[in-house]
Length: 143
Image (cartoon, rainbow, N blue to C red; front, side, top):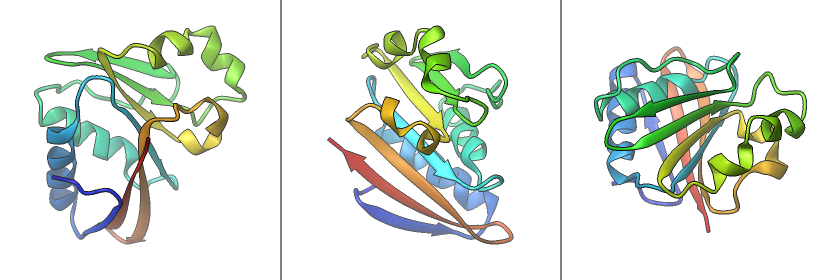
């Protein structure tokens, strides 16, 4: 179980996958999860690993689509803010409906690019590249 706040280091992709799986165990409907980190830090890898652990196997980056949706025991919306120029682009696709849907789990990559639209209640995961496959994950909860 992930504690908040906490910092966890991983050395391999396998350890990162296990961390993502452990994180997903604690997720529930209505959670908003924001992932920040440099290009190549592993934001999409973390989300893919988390979702694979619950049986979602077709996960890919929504860089061009802005949002991908997955359904199994959860309805999961996976956003990527990297290519967005402003918040109007989010509102054009119904951002408020997504944020207000308490039956869904939202994963948001690059949330730091549009902090004004982030939900007040959220979990933030900051990923720092240490070297090679080594990463430092900082987990923080905002309520």
